[in-house]
Length: 376
Image (cartoon, rainbow, N blue to C red; front, side):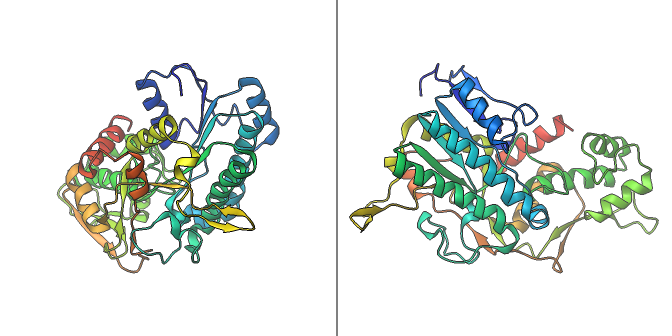
């Protein structure tokens, strides 16, 4: 990419997209193009075709997607498979039709089997059944990988797929109804700290910024206590909570034993820009591919992006507790599911391509909490 190349970032307001925009600007790229979802509905083929015809981008970062936590994925199964398929189908196809020089498609490591050898190598894709709760989303992302591969093989395009591990950072989703584990822990500890300090100004400010099930700072104190309790933030007071000096508990699903990997979103963005600047599809074609009817069988060309390091949910929760300054108790609800016990990416391919992560988890959690606090 040249500094004046026209670059389209789809999903520029999201966790990854906003980090990609920031990274590109910091490196001197000035000809960036993006649209909000209200300006351009990527689910609409006509709108996407008109956008590409008008803008003629040279490079595309496809970071737009419908995303959510385990509850949202399992509840809105049709929405997750339909909307993600439509978004990626339209953008990838129009990138081909308008001769985009290179496209980067972002997926997720949920593409791997529910029971997968650890750490998860790219070659383990489609070797077993998926985790049921996010199967529709995972299938959509697998389709995106195969679409990029197929267009490359048939049309000679230069489309690359990257599969990030669990991400966190600025512009994360802190909505307790839909958020992933790390932003949820940060917000729950923040609310728990305010409750143990009987700081109703902080509680109301938080809920005004991001209501929980419609409950905002204008609700009664009892309504606020009730919604906090529903989401596992509760006081030990026999009077219902909210008294200074009470012991406040924050609930965490499961035993705390599952191991998870986390990557700072701005590291993820740096990896994406590095790949777009330095690597092409041919660089990720596996060595020693098999021949099938005189043509090579080329698959598993996606790239895992992660740290190659993991932490237990229990240790993660205590790290967040320390960072936020919450002094209460952590309650591990073993009636709730643990999910997969270990999900760790093998990042050998990424490292061999010349990139490694920089931001350690402890530093990243501090930065994420600072960002959330400033935007509270």
